[in-house]
Amino acid sequence: MKAHTRNIVEAGTMEILRKQFFFLSELVIRNVRSLGSGDQPLFLQHCPMAFNNQGGDWVSAQPQIMNPYFGDEMLHCGIVKDSFLVLNSNH
Image (cartoon, rainbow, N blue to C red):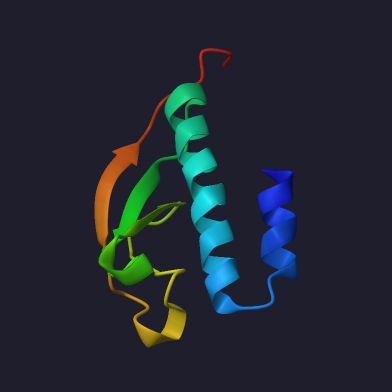
């Protein structure tokens, strides 16, 4: 996760930034699915147009779409695919 975060900060192009965000999001999604989201609901969101219509997912604390792949170009483009409200077994 640290490497992808560092690569996002150091990205020289939007293409690199988007790819690194995709990789980081995949890790976050797996962690939320396996470890839980605590007592905060989280939303799995999807941009169908990212990566030449291959699509890309991300996790958000809000149900409203704020598309990180295209930002101001298509800020509200996307769908909510799922939601998580999983209490950690440690709490």
